[in-house]
Image (cartoon, rainbow, N blue to C red; front, top):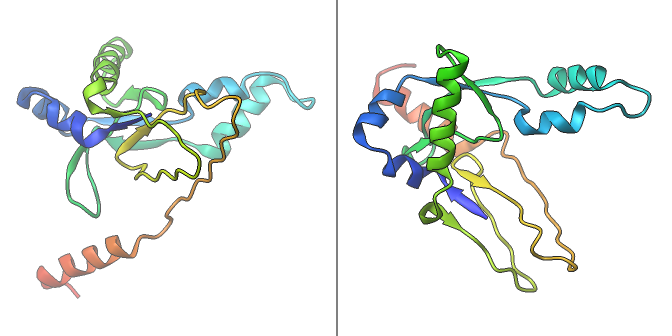
Length: 168
C-alpha cells in the first residue's frame, strides 16, 4: 500500500497549510524503536536501543516539504517516524500528530497493489508512505531497496539556480 504525500498536502485546508508552514518535525526510529528495546545477543534493551539511536540518529525536517526535483509541495509526515513537533508541548504535538496521521491515512490518497507474477513496483520514498501488507502469503515476496545518495538532477537544479542569481 502506498499513500501520496502530495495528495495529503493538496487536501489540507488553506488555513492548516499556513499553520503548518514553518513547523518542523523530529524524525527518528519511531515505531522501530521496539525492535531494538529487547535483550538480544547478550546486550540489554537499553544498550541495543542506545546503539541504534547512535547508528541511525534523528533528523529535523519541515512538516511542509518541497520536492527537490519536481518543486511540488508535500506533507512531510509519517506517524511511524515522527516523534515530536519542534516548539510544541508534548500534548500539542500529540494532538497534531493524531490529526496528521488520520489525515495521511485517507483511502483517497492510497493505492493498494494487487500483485501478479512478475510485477515490479517503484516509488519515490521522499513523497510516499509505504506499508507492506502480508497479503501475498504463502507466496514469496522479494523487496530490494535502492536509496539515491546523490541525485544529479538536484545538483543541476541548484547549479542553475546559482547561475540565474549571478552566483559563481
